[in-house]
Length: 381
Image (cartoon, rainbow, N blue to C red):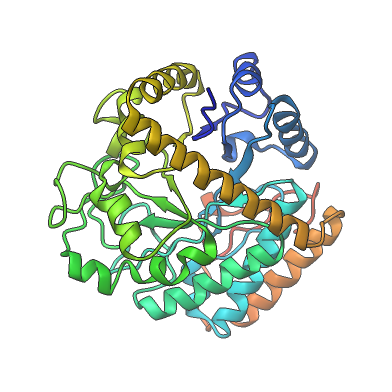
């Protein structure tokens, strides 16, 4: 059976025998890369090439490249500013588009199709734990303008975007990596504020990531959005979204503590997720695939939902392929570094005057050049 709705993570910088078997026997829809998978330019290109050559249907390669503290390529490409920094300086939309384009060029060079960005959560007075400096601001119109520019820069470089974290965790009570985060707002408040960027940008992005926040005024207070049909399928339809819904990592404690991986996979599919991510314990994937296959074959409703997910996932893959066909390739790493450096230098000139402070633990020494040491994280992380 085609189990092409799962996205997986890899354990390290080279493939294990188990990962090779999973990739060859039951090609996952996506492989999500993290810092633990990245050591250098040649190593990363080789890893991605091997992943795609092993799988019968090459998986989409996905990565979180937002800039600031979520910057998976930080060891090999000059450090990029955070979303919040883009909103603080002059020429915000222009700089956002340029940043998206440079990040897109970076991912295109490494043959990565999807950036799991931008974040379109709308911040409250203070960012919740886990979202520090990752949001574009408190005003929905500003978020739409800056995130939209970033997304269009990515797409112009041939890389697809994915808006996150639906239906909005910008005023959440905690970090969903470690437990439940509560967004205690009404349906009306959600429509007027948090859902605005998803409604206005979703079909242009073609992909939305479903978060693990709980919304006690809208659905079961113990049920994260990723497992809630009301908060996923119904709200996505309400805002007119017709693209692919990608779950956030189902191994975050906000959802993984609620049951077995098999059970939460089934519930995530029923809730309306079309691609379901498990980013850490790759050894669990064969059991999840076997269970999902059984449920699809024995339950017509789950089978129908599965086929709908396959269709949406295939449409998003076609979108990724179209973006790549229409954008020029990036053949030279030197060209990429030069463009990234130009962006960082120009961005710095748009920043308001402020006292510079870089904690020693955050500092990266050396030149902005491959093979010459690490670049400075600087004040925008």
